[in-house]
Length: 495
Image (tube, rainbow, N blue to C red; front, top):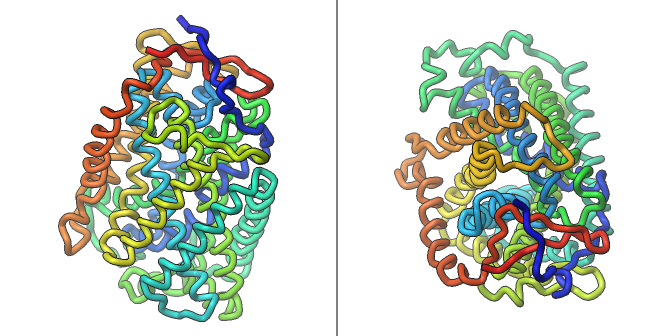
């Protein structure tokens, strides 16, 4: 049975400006994991691990993630509230379950934000003429990116929307344009290479073993298709969210999948020497292929395109993290809740939450500069952290369906709901295990266990924080909300 509120949150002044429409929410989810970031981040790793045949992994991961996206689209159509995964999990299985979902997602977003900023710093350094930037150089550039990103977020929705939409235009033109040019004028490999492993070396390996090349490549590819859920992170800032957000989630993952798969295919077919890539002689096959086929003159424009993609992704990550922190603090679920729920007067931006992401990001930059292993730990945890966060609402949704307690929202897939939810949960579980599996990759054994170690540390610290705030967290299981002045207001009853 759904319940109504005793005290609407709107009376406390916690209402955001509803300025985003479908295109803006789609652009936000698209920018979160941009095609440029997704492609550049995993292409070289997957190609050297499994050879050109890794490309088929895109289809597998996309199919699994589309099932997850369908579940999230149903959840957001019923509960379009700021904080997405935290809100859905809380309403499905209770405050403790939802709190730990939000805690895992907060740290995933903040750590991903820091790693993306450091990634962008490397390209900016190259554009500025610093050929081999030191850790200190990258940390300082990343810090400037963090400050500028915070300023853009505080400036309000208009600036954010313009940047996001502009980044989509640049990335689509750049990715699709380069892909078409390569596949039409610079294809040197036959399509048959897509069925070759280890770049055609003929190495005999068990591709489906837990440490086999193909499953390792699937773990890398998993990073390419996350971020679609971020449209729900800004749900209370989107007009007609019950209809616009499900479309934004499904369209963004589909659009990104098409672009990433097409661009990857075009680069594979244009690589001059696949064996050189397999042997490790070519450290960056994307950059090497583009500069070889299109000339050295493409280097700077290409790096500028990379920077645009990374900056857009950084902004979306910081925005998502700040909204999630703000939403949790609004429920009293975080320490210093009054500070973290503070909104700017004119733009209604969560100032306190944005500043805390800036502080945490700065600390992570300092740590990465002191110890390179910290940066490796951050990068490794990011992909696993997303799938860990996904598991919370997926588990909650399957449990509620099994109890026959689910009430569909505007978006529904009818009788297919239960089988889709079950397969989505199985997929996310297997992919998390695949990503977190401690394969022997690094000289330092603890780096092979980085996702498991990171999860354990965040869990232990989270348990201590939760104990300090649990008395203030509302019980919102089965609770609906009503629209108040076009702003979704959670209807809660305190325990």
